[in-house]
Length: 572
Image (cartoon, rainbow, N blue to C red):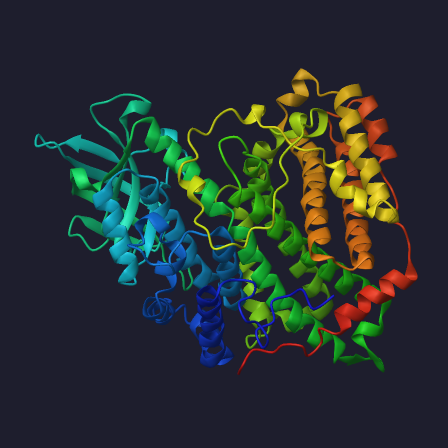
């Protein structure tokens, strides 16, 4: 089993087509040639990422990655392909979250445009991408956050078939330079959902007033205000319920990439931390000779591998989605909530080992240590995504249905369905395949057998000790139940991908051993909730299971961790 982490010295953009591989490799080369000192200097000086955007414009990076085939004017290099978008997200965050952020909010800004039937706006967007511009998503407001029911961006009819827009937006990435900002508002003369409007604004227009950067860093997360901004017919992207759907569906598309940003940061931190710990001598011993250090580093490594396996498989479900197969609507929030949270756990574990080193200004780790918590809080908090995940639990656990087999998707195809998702309703009618099938190839592994028993027990809990009416209103209680359910879904896709990649079975069993421990901890938390019933408490106690012990397996995992020492150091 080769090193599963992104490894810049040998990375060749595999397994993509030649042009995609060239773009990915060129991005790695740009960062490496720039060097670590410059990377850290710009971070500490909060320098806007203009030089990176100049590079991306010169290479046509965003234009290639983010122009759908239908708007590519015949270019075979351009398509909206989630697999390679995810790969670029990982690469960018490997070098810094702020570089990824400029790419991410461009994705969000383009979402309402590519979902629109407004050909003039689409052509304008494609041209701006060719010119190297970035985009922005004007949804959030200071008073309402992302509550799109309560927007105060008001469009007033101008008497000539257009509107003037007045209002403020807050937390809007790229709002300082975006040539098209997809802005959500409502008409002054129409009540209710029929009055919603998505329109395109230009940050360089005289009626567009940039107020400030709301954060202290390289990224520009703007507050802006429109004052009688002229909105013409060719600026209007969506109206009424379609505007509402475009907002939700854009978030569905955009939030999937967030997990890959977390992966990239955690990978770079892993190289730095293991190299430092393995070459540091304390009390006459290598730091990594201490058993608790080996355990912590091994667990961090296993969690990171699991993150990559789950995320890779989730890509396939997203790319294969259709009106008849919307399983991605579960796997997306799991990716957003679980992968990002796991990255925080990984970096926290590494930091426990390297201690003061994690604060040193010449490390990537110090920067990522500040930033690693951000992805879990973007495009909906962990709690918001858990609440969404819970909607799928009854169908997933209690009513599995036969489903088509989903292939690995790295083919150079445009992901058309993502811009034709339709109304975001009917979630309770989405069906899932039996999760047990993913566990079958590993039925002989002891930890896989234990986690399967815990998963079966979760389904039994819903039948024998269902939530009371009061518990269903108690978010503190049901979100803990959602954590247990999420662990099972996470293991499901992780195991599917492990089989596809033929991951070493010792590594698979060790990963699942970590998840068994996590399930036990979550069951303990459920037991301690004030709202838990006696039957639920009894169930929780029975789920506290010890992961299977295997010294030979653990030694083999440690050898893989140890091999990462000195495996990568960014060009000075």
